[in-house]
Structures are given as C-alpha cells and as structure tokens.
Image (cartoon, rainbow, N blue to C red; front, side, top):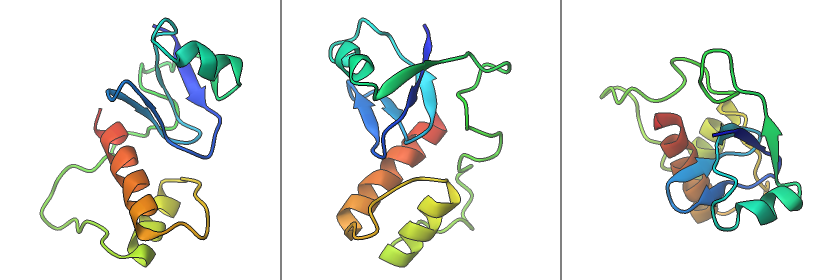
Length: 112
C-alpha cells in the first residue's frame, strides 16, 4: 500500500482505523471510500516509503510507552504544550474539546 501525507491542518480519519495527523504520513489504500476525493482535493498527497518502514515524521521513542510517570494533559495549557511538542497545527482559539480530540487522534496514530 502506498504512503500518503496529510497536507491539511486537521486530523484525517479514514474509516475509523487510519488516523493521519497534520503533516504526517501513513499507509493508505487509495481504493478506500472517500480517499480518492481527499487525493483529488490535495488533502492527501503520495509520499515516499520511509527507509525504515515507519511513517514519515514518526520518530522512534516518540510514542508514549505508557509509563506511570507520564501525566495525561488535562488542561488547555497542557494540551497545547503537548500538541506543540508533537508539531501539531491547531487553531489558536480552539476549545478544550477540540484540543482533546486532536490529542487523542495524535496519540492513537503514534501508537499504531
């Protein structure tokens, strides 16, 4: 399956099983419903397969390893700090629910 990069400022969720954070890449089946439209609109662009087989932008050790000393961000300030650390783009006026949704999506994509 080819790799595609999300060129938008939003998280792309394909079928509930493939989540692509802004500026990140993932393997995507171009035959999946709705993907062709995302490609035609320029929201997904084909990317090269990473040499180590991991999606572009995903660095080893970047994903949470679930240790007890890691605190989940729970305030707007903590969420923004975490998202900034991941290089995520979001609206500066985003509310907590929007930031929490982006956090959950990015965290899920990092664990895949």
